[in-house]
Length: 215
Image (cartoon, rainbow, N blue to C red; front, side, top):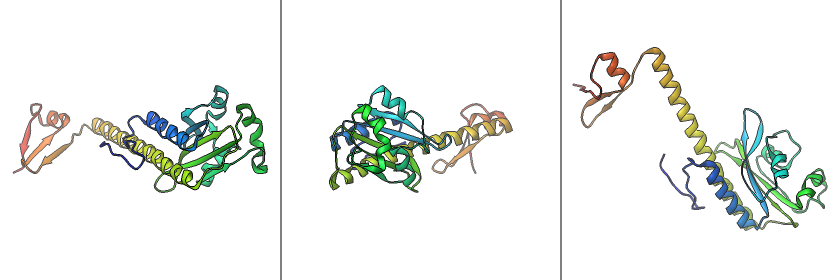
């Protein structure tokens, strides 16, 4: 897979997905002057959010986030369901999110935001969240840049999912060819040669590395 960059300057090659998501998270925390944050990936089979990158969170907070159900009564699940951002300037003054106080008080958190990570079709991939120890209202500039970081994270996750799907497809094809005792070949138009894999050469009784003229 070729490596590219976007406006955040981070590579789009997802071969080190946790490490790259950690970089996106830390850039977001620096942008927002946040005290902590996390990236959670959405497991569509198990219907849970799993933490893959975090910064500044206690073990108790991570245990709370671990394997969180998409149906959980949390700001992360709400952001995922709405496919949008949920932001709370001050949890002690927001009646809609009073249920969060018992958990957030233990961490000393007053403000927080959670931005849904979506693929290009708008399907949920995960959540990028940050927390603040003091009430915090993000500026329009900070929100726009946060969206850019969220897009970066989504592209990285999407690239990894596409690579996983490609490898899975190739493995299924390999297994199918093995079971059927079949091989594959390709044609080099410049040399006008048919190039066969080891299985095909074995079936034809040809030496390894053989190639054949198409004409």
